[in-house]
Length: 225
Image (cartoon, rainbow, N blue to C red; front, side):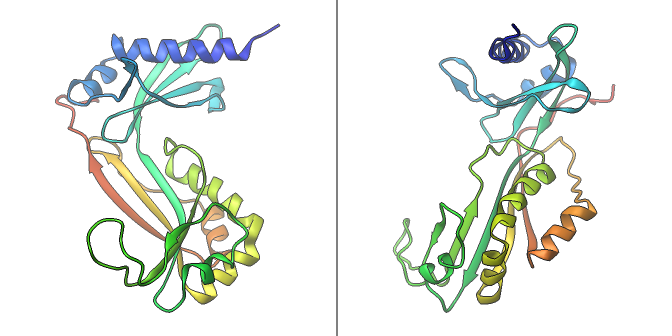
């Protein structure tokens, strides 16, 4: 009987081996000036994806600055590294703010949980000042090691289980999808949302706010060479 767990362990081992002793020039270039986060002396595995197109799997290893080394693997006829690239860290949440209402007023619009935030006038956790507006946010409990549009679609699917609540929230606050992207300095900075995603956002009456933080040290050679 085929053991999927055994395959996943092989994916992890092969990806870590590629990071420790690169066989691909791109791996070497990415790691030349950027350090991976370690757990017990080995690169930290953030996520494993076994549903990539063309029968590939991917292991995401986390860099110290928050973005990821994506090691793509063939699964048949043998498990082996196919190619390597970097993936941005994408933190995506539903966020609503108000200068008049309290946290509980906004939170009761939604059946989603858990919700985070504060009320206007609450003392900030750092410093001596108080918040000048109320905020409530909801974020899927999944890794940030996802393509931006793919993760946004997953969040929209969750929000659509409470469409009525989201629409009610947009009527009593300024609500939007907040994306905080940690983009590798030598990576592709392009952003794409297909028509379906834009239509889903429109039906929920939500706009997008994207904050891109450039991280990491650039590669020292041309990756196209």
